[in-house]
Image 1 (cartoon, rainbow, N blue to C red):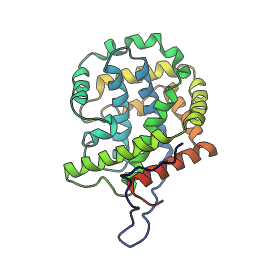
Image 2 (image 1 turned 135 degrees about the vertical axis):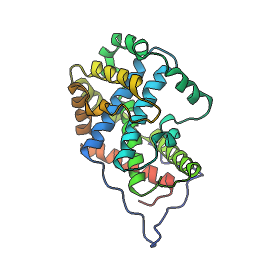
Image 3 (image 1 turned 180 degrees about the horizontal axis):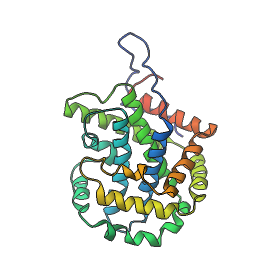
Length: 261
């Protein structure tokens, strides 16, 4: 990991009482399981041989993880208000993705069956899974601090953009080698995980509407193999060496947001 700092890095924020801001609470096991399930489904995007539609799969799985996080924190606005968080971009390409969603899911994901057998051996799959988990965790920590609560849509989107920028910078600085090895082992232990993830991705594409949370059964009624895979990932995250990496990531995000840890 590099230790460089960026010129836009602000000064540490303090509370109105003059002290450091309260540290956010840890997410519940259920939240982590949901994030991990969404991350596994997002990784299926690597096996969708259709331009743009692979991005749709990953984006929708990520959006669901964030929607579930908003629901957990009882935010009244829709996840689409935070679009930049799950797209990481804006403008014409995001619009193209929305247009391409109209393609029937059975057409999009049918070819996946040919490739899911090598799901756990593709080197970037663990990074995809962890990327969703860490993004949802970053949102959780922000919401737990009382942020992203404004009713001003423009201000809310500016906050979301700032959070995404901090997340991207911190994630780029992570050394994922230890995580990659641990998650590869976890994802390779469950029989049928790849097929279950592909099935969940197909349901997600077919049923998720513009409000973002219509496919909550992705994690609530998922195949046992997907839930077991998510629990395996959750166990990996509890290891001391992995917990230390996540803690370092949190500190980096906080620093780029100008929050003193």
